Length: 274
Ligand code: NAP
Image (cartoon, rainbow, N blue to C red; front, side, top):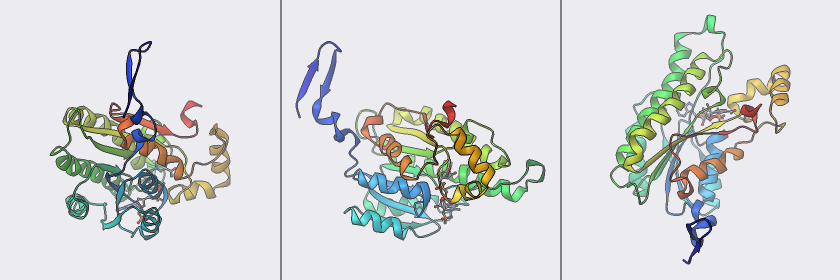
């Protein structure tokens, strides 16, 4: 690997790492929750394309995702877990480490949404969303980080945690009180964990997807008025695809993002810029 000194910038640039190497995830093991469909599937496939092996975690078997990953010559293990409680959290980490020997990257993607007027919102809809989107996410971060602190170091290989936030990490939304509370919580928690774990060699960041065409947004897409209002507000003029989120996940999981901490990266076709 050659190094060239660009004196006008006073920066030493190692050419070998400035290209794709910086985003290369070969030899890395990533846990992706909710990897059977939607954004989780898009992220799992993108991480595998960048070279990572994948533990595809969820309550539905991610067989289609596994087929796509195997076709690329990468490994994919299915880990069964219902993340509506924290009961399976430690097992997810243990099973991943026992299958692959390690865990480098955690993507907390699994999430649910419940839509109802705030005046009528039930305790059950509150608890289901908060438990899955926020409580299980935190304890999975904790369990993965307990493994990562064993090997991660400030200057060497780093653990990477990526939480899936939302536009409702920044905005209020409407008729989704527990979802807004959970995703606002994901933003705050991401920053807190970055503060605590940066010095332990772990990067904690989040991706805030805009309006992505998945099961989660099927009701909005089917509502003609809401669909038109949403499209009119997106500068890109289209719904995002799960694959649109993959590049941001590869970036945050890679060496290129070693100095990125506590950031919530919007991938929204310009929605927040409007
Ligand atoms: P999706 O297609 O509904 O996928 C949700 C994923 O979470 C599925 O794999 C689902 O598994 C899994 N999941 C839900 N509850 C679970 C549980 N108790 N245990 C284990 N897995 C569970 O929706 P998506 O849009 O891809 O959502 C993925 C993430 O992106 C979510 O956190 C969501 O809040 C977030 N997000 C989505 C958008 C968007 O516009 N689509 C925007 C911002 C943020 P099953 O298939 O078994 O239900």
